[in-house]
Image 1 (cartoon, rainbow, N blue to C red):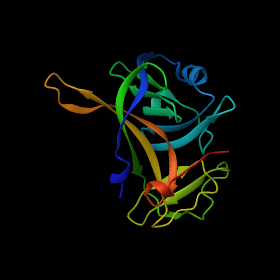
Image 2 (cartoon, rainbow, N blue to C red):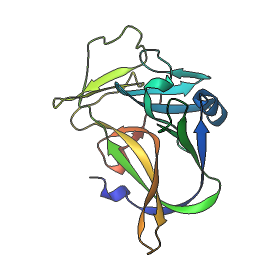
Image 3 (cartoon, rainbow, N blue to C red):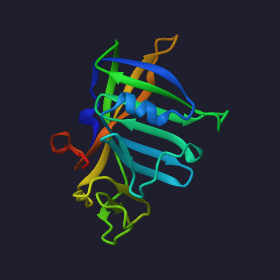
Length: 199
């Protein structure tokens, strides 16, 4: 279904490591006007967004460092990736990757299908205006910041990823980094993929 999108291309990109000690919100504010957020917490995965200097999840929670395992803040051109460090709770480690500047690297873009074949019609949270819960028969649910989202067995939600290629000392190619670029909906074929936007 996705083989037609696995095309090798060259892009300008740069990546730098970060040591984040209670500075996640500052890094987001400094690097983004708007962004999607995927927070891997101890108790699940939260999807939200950053817009107008505000982080928003369906339950109006904030980014609480003590519950974060990994965090991706991203838009089409950049991503801030953070993960819990071994010396936690003193801070998270991270990197910022920005395309359209820096050196040239080879990449492959791909779409990763998410769970969710139907909308949950129940009002799952009074605070969740602007969000929609999607579920699947085999289990699992996601609450996404796309209130007009429609899904079914043929129309699904995808995350577009960009995979960066590097070479080892034997000149063998492999992925050295991966970042999220955005949420899309469609049937999996490139010509039918449509970018999702929040608010």
